[in-house]
Length: 136
Image (cartoon, rainbow, N blue to C red; front, side, top):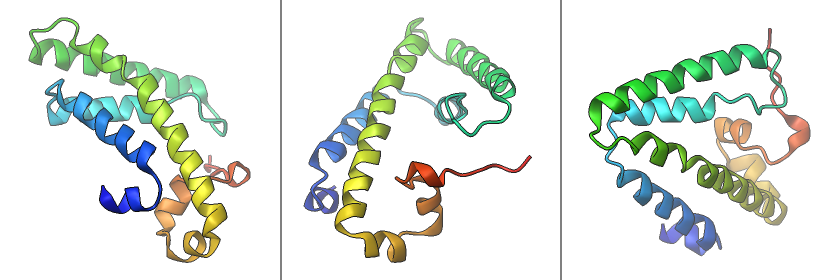
């Protein structure tokens, strides 16, 4: 955490740790975290999607599985609603992260181009013009 703060990312780091603490307070199982992660990542709001309807159907199945497992594991009937209510915060964190990456790239382009791992560059490339195109 100190390393990221030294880079000038105090807001982002603090927000990520706060989000993690709030998620931990729900006492989710690994299975629930995996399904929640899948539901958030498999989203129809990706501009390069070729078949968003198929993605939406898959996401609905994931949410159904998440709902089923959470009803089985939690006495609190609002547990799923509490989890879902955290999605806007997660989206805001993604936006803040992208902004921090853009600022870092402007200040240190050589570091981004040379030292960032390839997967990181692919997933978090702050240049929207180089969006990944998925093969059919």
